[in-house]
Image (cartoon, rainbow, N blue to C red; front, side):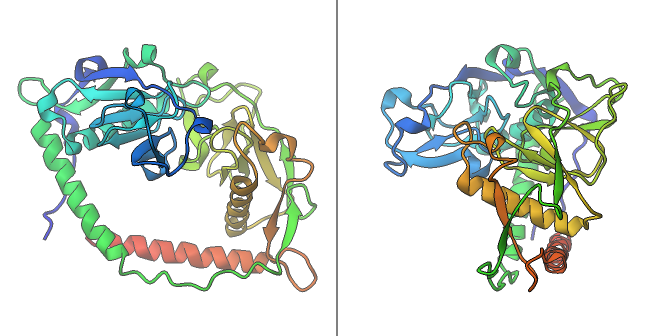
Length: 357
């Protein structure tokens, strides 16, 4: 039986320089076109978020190996991952952090440190304003401190062990949930363009540069080419004479690593370069927007490729995606709405079940 999780007590936390805690270095780089996927047992780690950054496993020359038991930061995406074993990196912009205090270089400590780093650095960097070795050496972050003002490694270890134990129990509970559903039959679905009359008008966005934005009195979300947090990379000051887009509109990333990321925005927002705004041509229900955004993302990831064949050149011409249709051939709004409503309801129920632990 797991003991109750103790809430973090921030009263004893202290600001530390990253350079005092970690050895830092840029990784070497083996670009994707030079690898043979699934050719070996060495993790090929990228700056992507899923699967702990591991894209595939390869045969890697010893001179290209990075030491394991470290944190890898995606230099362009600010992703964080703990790499337990030696690995190869796809980009020399990526950075490894290795604890100077080798006696405390354990998995639980690194996992806690990743959470602390993400909390401190996430709002400071974006795709348009990425981190670098020069900049990270000047950064600080907060950690729990002991009575001597040193990092409280015992506290970090104890807290992460509680988190990991609770995660195991939660995963066990999830495994018992019945997710069996009939696969969608899309054989009678029809392809639509974004600009079709019943869907959206396309606005090219505000095209702002994140690094030039201020955050003195932040009130407007800033949406970049990201695939987490609805694409929101910061909250910034409103710009005089530039009203933000309204909540409820969709954003779509046209390029970059997260090409095709499409989200319904919950609050007023600005956009970065290469993020367009989809404005529904009618009072489209929230559930329908979610359904369509999912289909847009699916189509984008299957048929287009970052930095090679991006959405920019296809958006107003041949980019299309499948939607369910009625017997008359028009979009089946009722089906989309009901389908997403059932998924949302099921998800909320699962979350409620998990929170009982």
